[in-house]
Structures are given as structure tokens and as C-alpha cells.
Length: 129
Image (tube, rainbow, N blue to C red; front, side):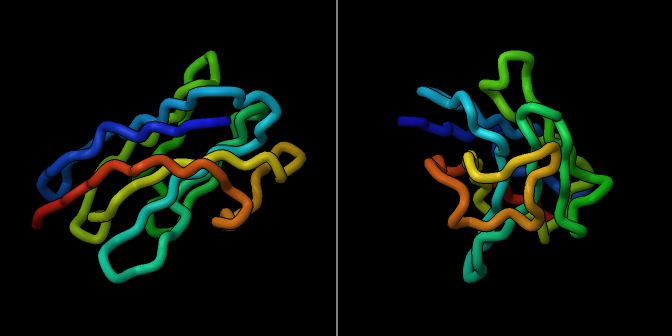
């Protein structure tokens, strides 16, 4: 069993920054990719960023490219999402999850929700204008 715990969300003004963390517990060896998703009220959950655990390669939604950066700690048990130049359109609940399906150095983009498992409870990000 694997558990993801997201943290670091909060309320910021437009232009501000936040750093989200995704702590992974349990048996998480052999997973390939970790993705950050977000879901705004009334909208579908969408992929924001993905990182390949073994190679460190990343990919991002066009809406966040140049503003968000995904990274991991040396133990690969915590994944981060550094978010800069935040705008009201970034307001959402942010989730992380892992995939064991992808192979190779680059994770599938966009990430398919049904390929990711053990979503956490999410962390709320609210950006005011």
C-alpha cells in the first residue's frame, strides 16, 4: 500500500509563490512517475506536472510552463512543486499520485488519471487578485 500526503497549500496574492510537497509512504519502489494534478471547482481534474523518478525528467502543462517546477528529494520519497507567479487561474486543490505503468526516461504527457494511483487528500491553493 502506498500513501501520498500533500501539503504546502495556502492563500496567496497574485504574483506570489508556494511550494507544495508530496510525501510518499509505503512500498513505492519500482514506480516510474509521479504527477501533480489539480482540480478547480466545477472543472475536471487536470495534469499539471509530471516527474520521472528514475531519470528526473519533467513535463508541464502549457499553462504552468516557466512558472512551476517539479523536483524530488534524494530519497525519492518526497516530490515538490515549486509554483511562482501564481494567478487566480491557479486556484484549485492540488493532488499527487504515482504511476507504475510508464517506461523509459519520459513519462506520458498528459498524464492519464487512470494510470495513477493512491491519490492523496489534496492541498488547497487559493490565489487572490
